[in-house]
Length: 391
Ligand SMILES: Cc1ncc(COP(=O)(O)O)c(C=O)c1O
Image (cartoon, rainbow, N blue to C red):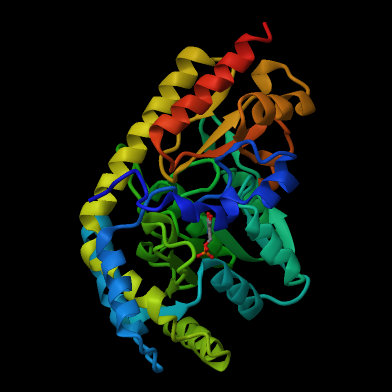
C-alpha cells in the first residue's frame, strides 16, 4: 500500500535533492525545502522492497542477464493501463532514459545536425544534444488560455528547412505538465512523416496522468520512423537511483541497429537489482501506484485551488500529468532577484528556475509536488505570508 512517511528518515542526507552542498550552490542556502529535483519523497512499493531484500539475502551475484523477462510485465502493464499493445520482442534494454537519448542522438544524427526540442523542456535534453556536438533547434511552445500548446506552424517550417534530423518529444511534457493528445501527436507525426524525420519520444512520465487526460504513446501511432523510450520505473515507482530504461520500436531495422550498438558497448544486460525491482514494480506494484497517483492528484488539486484563491497574481498551469507544477510569478511585479530571494529566503522553497528549461522569462519556476501534502501546504502558506507581508 502507498504510504507517505519513510521508515528511515535518516538516509535522506545522501540524496542530491536534500544535499546541503548542492542546495548552497544552487540556492545560496540549505535552509530550504527541496522541490527542485524530479524524484519523490515517498518510500517505494513493498513488493519492490521485498524483491530487493531477497536479492540482498541471496548474497551471491554471479553474472545474471535477466533483462528479457522484464519486457512481458511492462507490456502487460501498458496494455492494462493505457490499452497499448506492445510486442515484448520489440524492446531494447538500456541503462536509463538519458543514456538512451544520448545513444540515439549519436546513432541517428551526425555532428552539427539539428535535433528539435519543444521549449521550455526538461533541461537535460539540450545538454545531451549539445554535448554530442549536435544543434538544439528550439520549437517554442505557446500559451493559449493558460495552457501550453504546440506551435505546429513553426514546427512544420523547421522540419521543411531541412535543418532538423531528429525530433525529441517529451510526452507527457516536463515541466509544463501537458499530456499531449492523440490529435496533437498525430499532427506532429504526419509532419515528421512528410519530411522523413526520426521521432524519439521520452515517455518516462507516461503513467503519471491525472483524471481528465489520456496518455497516448507515440508507439501507438504507427509511424515507422519513430522510437519510444517507454521509460523506466524511475518516475512512477520512485526508482531513480535504480535506473533502467527501455526503448521500444516496431521498426525491425531501427531496433536491430540499436541492439547492435548497445551490445557493442555491453549496455544490454542491466543490473540485477534494477531488473528485479522493475519486474516486481510492473507485476505487483499496481495497488501502490494507484495510491500514489490518487495522492499526488489530490495534492495537485489542493495547490491549484490554493493558488487561485490565495495567490491569484501567480499564474498556475494545471498539470494534466507529471508531478511537476509550473508557475509564472510575473503578475507579482517583482524584480527577478527580489523574487528569488522571496522564494528561497522567506518562503524557504527550493523551486527549479524556469530558465533551466530554456524559458527566457525569469519569473517562471517549477515545483515538484511528489512530497508529503502537509509539507507542500506549509510551504505555500509561507509563500503567501511572505507576499502578504510586502503589501
Ligand atoms: C523527461 C525526463 N526524461 C528523463 C529523465 C531522467 O531519466 P533517467 O534517470 O532514467 O535517465 C527525467 C527526470 O526527471 C525526465 O523528467
